[in-house]
Length: 439
Ligand code: AMP
Ligand code: MG
Image (tube, rainbow, N blue to C red; front, side, top):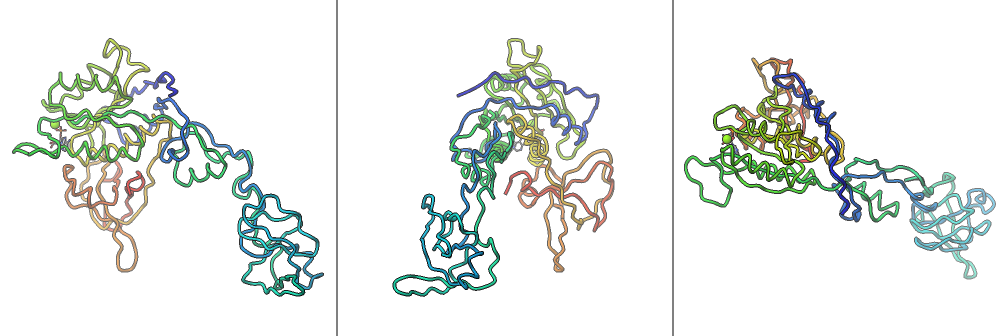
């Protein structure tokens, strides 16, 4: 495996804000993060969802040759009048026949979809439109009048021209991109290696599903939410389990995870309470760049880096592990992951920052007295009314612990900082979950 030294992540994340606004956080992450993984050659069949580490150039035309688009008869339109529409059939050309002979003057060739056009032919008529007759053991095809010259065949290079750049470094490969690469004949391609992502859940109250629950405990759903969300990011996940609300235990787990991973995602313990230790620990063993966001839910989210050198906290540098301290409530975890962590992971993996598309849809709800200066993400669902118009409804409960709100939602409704109310019928931005690859 080709693993170059990790590249320095520009650690200039300085800002002077107490609470970062959504766009400030996005701009900071988008402008500062860069690829930190090496690259490798991979079989095309394994490359779906991976990120290209090289441009893909077509070494030849696709298709390579002019070819018939239908089953029928190839002929030269200039011969049509001479033959009065009736041509002797002089050849038979099937798909895969290599280099057919040039078409004999004043004749037609039986031809099949995908077969190479013979030199001298410039049109193909569909077999359904023709009448065949035989005279003295020789076959003739009668072609109806009115066919457009140049009909029913595909030009060499009409899909892709030789030398054309069909895909660019940093693009995430979709199934159709894989097909396009295959059509140019390339079997192995260069992709960025998978980012190594550590997951840590924090909280004394947590336990994993499969064990019996006692009063005071809750199941660790965040771990499962994040591992499922990370599938769309095509990363390698390591599960560091549940860590208690204890400074030493958290520091130990973070340092351990930092030495073997590119990024750590924690959940819980990110607020200001006495049982919340993530900020203190991060300040001791690394650097905190962002903490406290002007958003709801997700205010305590933090971003930083953890040194893996001998002197934790000293000169965090190129071997640092990136750190996202996500809140504890599952709804906040999902919002923060989708809006900040997922696009950041794409950048670190050699991809591009992807802002989700916002669709303006009339609200079927009202909001009074929204706090100014923070952006709110509500769980929303599209509703089609009887007249066929779309509106968006919001989940009735605001609680960010309600996984049922995520389950019922089709996406997020984004209410920007400057808004303090929403009227029924007013356009609001709706972000379908499919924008994040959740289908
Ligand atoms: P915290 O930020 O640690 O105070 O957590 C906020 C809320 O989220 C608390 O009600 C926690 O019990 C809950 N919570 C924290 N971690 C998880 C988790 N892994 N799965 C589900 N809920 C969690
Ligand atoms: Mg907690």
